[in-house]
Amino acid sequence: MTHKNNIRSIIVITGPDGSGKSTLVNSICKINENFEPVSAWSQLSQSEFSSKEEVDQYIISLGPAERYRFITKAIESAITNSKAKKTLLIDGYWYKYAISESFLGLPLETAAMLVNHLPKPSLTLNLQMNPELAVERKSTPSRYEQLWMHGIDPSIIASRWHVLSGMMNHWLTIESSQKPEQVLEEAIGNINEFFGREVNS
Image (cartoon, rainbow, N blue to C red):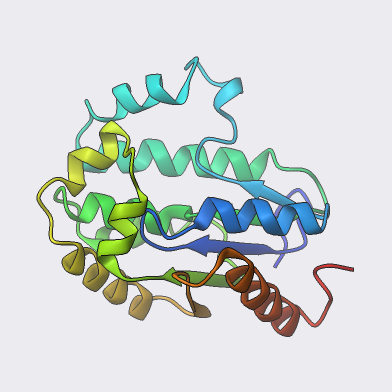
């Protein structure tokens, strides 16, 4: 798909905290400079906040709906200000935050309706791993992550991700408890097959 600033397509790398989203996004972008990494915090340097920690402190003071709107607005800004003709690799997208806010009182269905204006990804790769392992790998959660993850059984988080994936189209699942190079190889294979071009060419 294309966006208003001529982005060729949008690929989302999503999944639970600790599943390796940022690692995979950065690895793919290192292979091919035509991919641009994007996250909710890509435009942080252009905002009124001086650090991600300052944003973290601010958003935990908000209610679920207000916080979700703030974060998804940041994602929209990052997409709008991305480089022309780049294929975007979005880390998490609104999916990650819809899951988080669903544990704080915002239903998944409502979260989905609130982002109808955001561009639909061409492809979403959903990183899946053992829930306990994902939590273990997330050794230093932010205050926001602590706000919603505290006391929640990891298997319930995994179940919520399963519900969201069932609401979406074009999601491909990758078992991310594999070695990082295996996850990268599988992701590149999926992207090549979907778009019919070589990621690493």
